Image 1 (tube, rainbow, N blue to C red):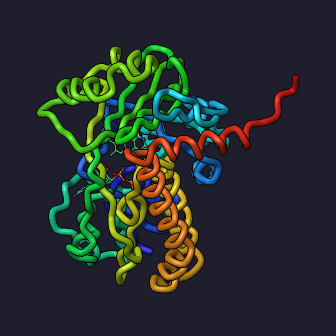
Image 2: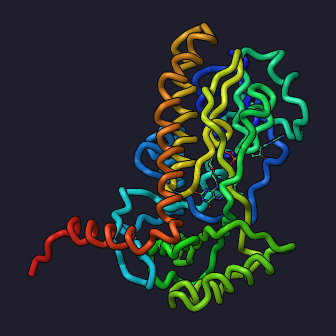
Length: 344
Ligand SMILES: Cc1cc2nc3c(=O)[nH]c(=O)nc-3n(C[C@H](O)[C@H](O)[C@H](O)COP(=O)(O)OP(=O)(O)OC[C@H]3O[C@@H](n4cnc5c(N)ncnc54)[C@H](O)[C@@H]3O)c2cc1C
């Protein structure tokens, strides 16, 4: 089949690689193929690791990953509520995952650098157009209309990296905000925060605001924030998309374009990789585009929507304000019940 993929993020690059390896004729289009300068981390769980293995990049990804066994869930007033096992996740800088995927693209994949303003011509001379163009997907707006436009979650996300060793591995749920600290490969720190929507004109201002909101709450957070550097910080809003079926005629949406989700379960990149895998398998089992896209929808629509809804529920739980004391009491009790028995 002739297949055009719009978007060379994790979803689109993985899809282009797998589709080309299955013998399809693939063009990959993006406005820029350059890697972002800040390499904040993604969690990659075993199903996503299997897709990376199929792409032949798992070992290279693993070389720049860390795999902590567990992290602390901390509630209001700094109380440890639970020790959360990592589920064999790898924590890997997004830039490294993307660079491994781009480097592994078969030479037959044609790359086109262009900012697409009108998606319609892109689907005319191909059998399938894959919209892997992210949360504000022009492909989704073009094929599904304004009702499918992304909507804000009403929060601002800040992420950053530091050279210093992390003071702990944790996620603190502080009421209307949360703050996470994880290790980077090689000994540095990855951090992320979600706060009620607030933007300053520049990243230095955004960091100053974050210090105002979270300063003095917990010593490990203070340590990270005092070392945070605007040049190694990313700031963006957070949007979700309404539930839509991912296929319209010969156009299919994958990754954030289909089901952008809150970051709270760490599954956006995982579902993106699984979408790419399922799409390449579905289109390689049949000569019929309609049949292949139907099979893709059957495989991915429900799991992707379940992760989207679950992530949203976790975001609501994590940023609960008035009900946070009750939440912490329940989670603390569950954490004590699930803690492994002491061996003394
Ligand atoms: C800069 C950045 C940093 C991130 N950091 C983290 C992180 O630290 N942790 C985490 O868990 N998640 C992070 N994410 C989110 C995570 O990578 C994604 O949710 C997940 O990988 C799914 O991505 P995707 O490929 O579907 O979409 P995206 O990664 O958004 O990729 C979409 C691609 O489409 C291209 N595109 C969009 N519109 C057009 C157009 N009109 N013309 C041409 N090209 C277009 C974009 O340039 C982009 O390359 C980050 C995302 C971004 C963009």
